[in-house]
Image 1 (cartoon, rainbow, N blue to C red):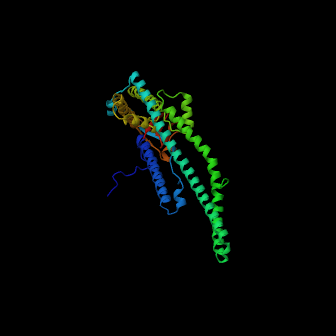
Image 2: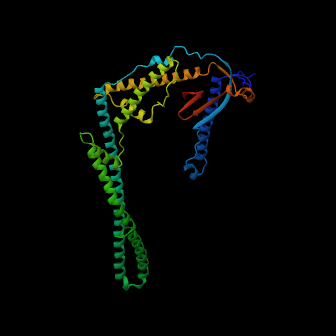
Image 3: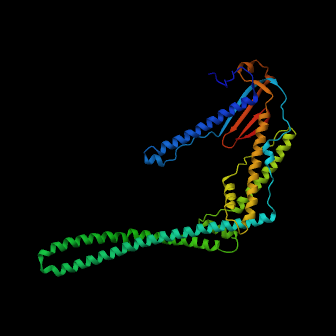
Length: 385
């Protein structure tokens, strides 16, 4: 059965757009193969049967950036067909917003929520430190008790031996028992005596553990107050090792990113309608912090003033995704238009036979981890993947 998509011979003209897409497909396939190789290697490490190898972090193969420079000659040129229709994703944009009063209320709630979460972490750490201190003290006390009992048994055996001196036949048995008990008492004394190894370790570690527990308790006290923490108090909490997530700052960052993306999309629409080059686009994919704060808000139990805010945040999240989808769709549309009217040849003979002034160069930069920038002539188009 013939191949439904036979490869284009190297000396036949090819649309410039198809040439770019073929390179992009090759880069994407290579990146996928490298990702699969990383997964296979990790599985090999984990299932090797070697405990040391299984605990090691295997290498990871990534394709960060691929640069391709290619000479070509144009054999046919027709005007690029733009049209006036925006992608259908444009119609799903709602332009959600949050009023200043609601924004202030949301920030206050997020500050309270961040402090509540941090207080729970401080209390959990304090309880864990209590358990560690108690276990250490209990272990030491058990050893001291065992040492006291061993010494008491040793003294009792010595007294029994003294009373039995009138019976020489019994003395060897007492001597053996006395020797065994003395060895046991000496071993326990080496660990749990006043200068024993365990006693010394506990005495050295205990002050630091108690100080750490106090820092957890002090942080709990600060976080349980009615007023928001001052910068100095927040610094004290963080120095104590308490996990504090500034949810209010994360929300402000996400909302500003949303507004910035909306402005960028408006500029891109204006440029598209004017048949001008699109402004450069950054990476507006929601970050881990963005998802964290949004899901934290939406996951709160309804009531206590959260219900109204949750509806507005849900609308903003939905519109964020809608704007991002429209932005990517517009970039893909422009990318499909760019070079659509050009047929080119890239084989060495065609390029070599053409006059120097007729030779063109294409520079392709594929960023596989974030986005793809494709430069055609002097214009660069970002293709979000």
